[in-house]
Image 1 (cartoon, one colour):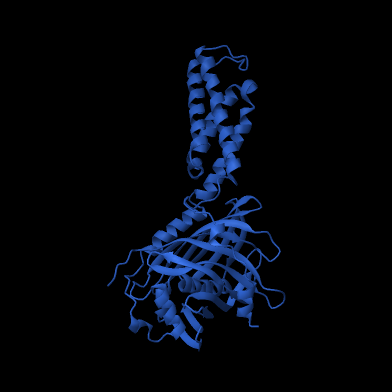
Image 2 (cartoon, helix red, strand yellow):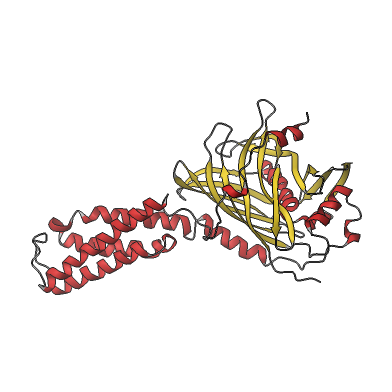
Length: 404
């Protein structure tokens, strides 16, 4: 049995019905789960409410045995300000907390220090608020993967060329199964994509025996003379939010992972990383933008009526892959020996056979495309295993079908 056939037999990807509809904006789970977010909000909000007791004491509206020290009216207004800031911090989205949380904690701590013997326990709540603000900045602030992703997306989308319609003449040089795929998918007669935005959901793991981690992801690809690929993943590792960012821009690829948006876990880069991500770039074209399979950067060889071999060149890198199609003409597998598995910290690579078997397809706009599948490593020693299983939730091409 061939390695490709074995890959198709051994896959057990999740089905589309196992993945819930994804409508929320991409971003890490707030703190590391909804219950923790709710607990955080409740603790911080109650902390803000308690500050209002300082106003009540200052105005003489009630006798409060908990507050033994006198509080002046001006200081009572400061207690009110602290309470309002802290309560607002409890209610804002976590992505905005860093803009307010530090100021709220500082004002709160000032009034606590002024009534230390009565209010020192509130310092614990302020530390919790500061931890949330630090995490918020790490996940959404200017140095976060999300901010870098947004900046890169804005930059690469300004370099997108106009789209041209895919014609029969464009496909004349392709092997027959590839031509059939373009017809069945509906790419023929449509604009050849110049850029795309895709959203995913699924699960991923670091090795055959490691636990699965749920994730959502968004990616942007651009095509043309200098293709780009930006892939931002929000995963959960051991219950903690984990940010993953693949960047392939200007013919250089990097792969970085941060636990809690702060702690570097993987920092992969260099020639082997770029070569591997060139495979991924071509895989994206095959799955998400089949109209680009006529590009001059791709050289084709026929294998048989259901398979073809491609050689894809991007910059200084040339990779090869075999594409396999079913009786309808839909793509069902992609196999390459040009991708390398990174070590846990991304410092070393081992080249292995890599495949992406596909099990379901559905329509995205006018196109019928693969929607559910997985990616497998095929080590020279040991059994093949799936390390990612995913469903394509949404796909759109940007800009819309402008043609020349």
